[in-house]
Length: 112
Image (tube, rainbow, N blue to C red; front, side, top):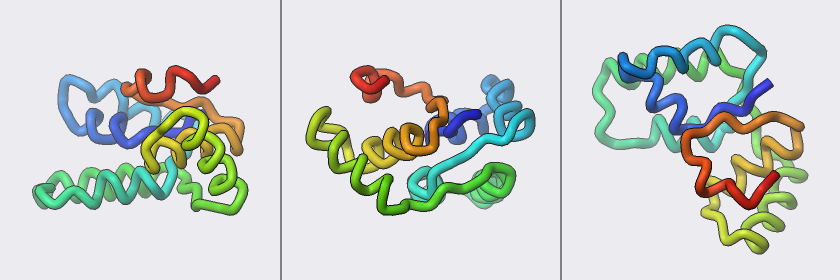
């Protein structure tokens, strides 16, 4: 099972990356509410992009930010100087024992 990072959802909207869409259907995969905010919070989305992204988030199981994720995020942010979003995403994957599916491996390289 995967935790789908924001960039996977964004890249999946491009026709050359349509192979990424299988992760929304094939397994019971998850997304952090942080990714939902990051993707849908972009101010320049077209109507069709909004519709596509809303549909993606309907297919994935959303994980809310619970206290254990907050505590782990604090530890990761201090230890690895991650951004707030990345620390919450990484913590969510760790707490829920999920593999993080991301194209941004550089930001997470220090975390198992």
